Image (cartoon, rainbow, N blue to C red; front, side, top):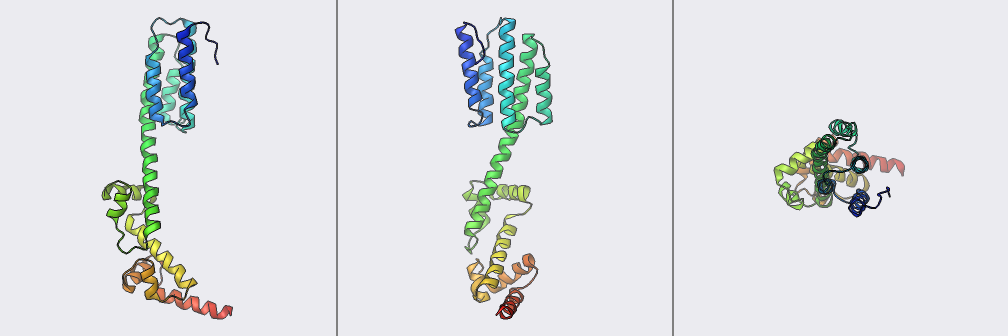
Length: 232
């Protein structure tokens, strides 16, 4: 713990700063930025040069730790804002103004990172829903959207942004790959396989299978049977 002399206020402030530093890995970054603002707002006027040097250093270390942990310390706008703050002297108006600017930039970048992270989680949930329910013939985009608590257009945009593919492409590709495995590994008929992977007809299976496997179920089954005979 830094040497804080005998000032009870200063000791309390340093304790609060260290408490926030200890929460960097567990609290939401935007919540921490808000609490750092609160801590910063409690600085009194008329601080001595020694106290200003200590508090300015602690605030810089706290924000630096937060940015490193969330891997945004190399972000160009954040880096510039941090350098402006770090290069200030001990003039209270100057360094405190630059520190506010640094917090504002952290809000912008960490906010964008949080949105991106949440979007990634929602995409993962949507993909898991497709994985878990692709054999259900009634599965549709609206049901997946409800499962991830988003509108159908919104989850469609997120899927295309994060995976490059839309809902139907993910669904039919998953069904086609599953059908290919069943054609090779089982003796189920093509009609049975179509029903097993979620299609209501062989025609549906044939159409999507040709698109994603670049062959037909009948051709894959014929090759599989030939390989089995050769192996025996």
